Picture 1 (cartoon, rainbow, N blue to C red):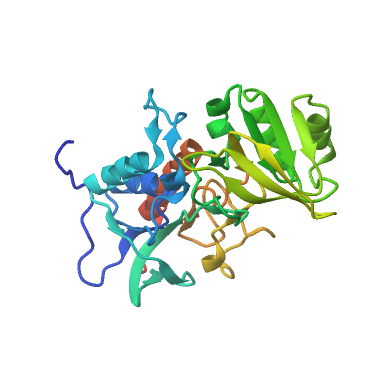
Picture 2: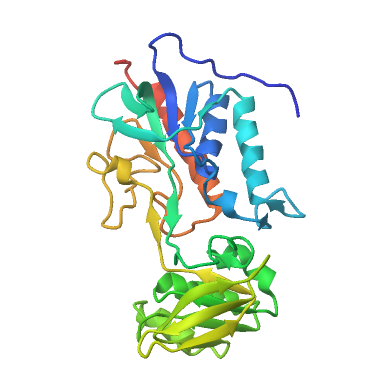
Length: 322
């Protein structure tokens, strides 16, 4: 790797940072690359578990620039190292509170208050898990959450999808392009997905539906081998042999820290105004904490680039009051 090139110096004394980024997935770290190269002093509050969902992923085959694929944690380390190379300061601690009603903006971490002229929120979204035995151990080894990312790994194999909403329908339909058989498992006797999506699923010969069924355990040593199931009506149990299971019961945006001052929809996704701006001056947003549609590593990185450029424009135009 080339030697470290510092484009942006740390603020001195009580001076605020030009940009504070909360979150350290592809969106946050890409934003940091752009802001530091834009000569803006940048601090990233990465959290105690940094790197986002890619840290739970094995092979990433659809991120440009890696023709042979790359392990998720390795990709995130490379992006982090690139951000640090240009002068990004990274704090591996959780933000405990924010105060965005005045300039400079305030961020409290481990009892210490940091000041910033602008903030990029890139805290992502958390997958809702089943919380059953075997699930956590086999994440990335047959337990997955993104069919557009991982479906090619299941060519001519048997897979299951858990859920009853539009996301589950989409996952199942994507998987039919590769898998030999797709079993859609739903704990109720009807889907909550849109009528159009239900029609597509119900008319697809590759998809088998298991109604009134829950997974009670995911079985496997180094990879998923089978699912232990329970019927929610009569409590009978059964087994389903599969090579993979896709959990599609929803995501929760990691936005609780910002409730109140930041406008959100009824699910907690931060509302975007004009690019990546939020309703508060100097506060921007990037990635799955606002993105309800794409949810890909490359799209979140793109949002990070956009937020960084919006923040740099704001810094250029803002009347200093800090």
